[in-house]
Image 1 (cartoon, rainbow, N blue to C red):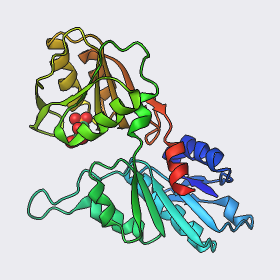
Image 2 (image 1 turned 45 degrees about the vertical axis):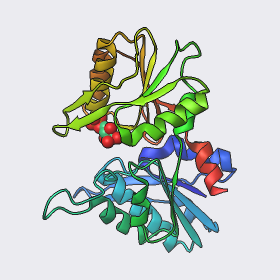
Image 3 (image 1 turned 180 degrees about the vertical axis):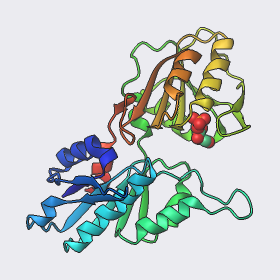
Length: 287
Ligand code: R5P
């Protein structure tokens, strides 16, 4: 049985179809004091599947709480195995203590999820090492190759660029899936949560279409700088692709204003840029 968090309903439905498993009826309520109650009426109807797959991107603090509640509801109903799929794991970028007195937030949330899961899957976390924070076996699934699918067929002498060295593997995956193009990366310096500086790569982008690839677009600061650099250097069209299109605050407009033709993301975060589903890679990992 597939049990969906409120932020992952479309992906959960696709996953249920891929696996041929039933999609649970899930209910989301809020008490007058603001507390949440995510429950699974399907389990009250007597269904006791061997396995419950809880699919919930933790895009907000509320989504974290929902996930814990759904895991617990499955356990309470006597389900034998609870597999938790966190397509987008919030707080994953806080994978170390950045100053004295800071928590390792990714570890804190992983520990909480671990209490209710027998197995965990997540998709392209910022660092794969985040999987080590979970107590049960945890796997990072790679959805990056699927980002090549929606790209236009007529890319002109394409260059696949990552905004920093850390994401060059994702850019390579997209290029390999596409079957053509050069790969390079920028040097990135972050000045604040929203402002970054991008140093140009050596590759000549003049009159070539660029596809800038990253694991996540949050505020859009990184991508808009990278696109600006490419446009200044005479690139053709600029496309951006990411696994997690968080697109917080004014990110969409910021990217459009920077000259982006189109933003391609996956449904780890469901929204206007979710062009690709990660359901099939998840289904493969769950089969
Ligand atoms: C950081 O290294 C990540 O790979 C992303 O580049 C970053 O988190 C994107 O954040 P923003 O969109 O806020 O620049």
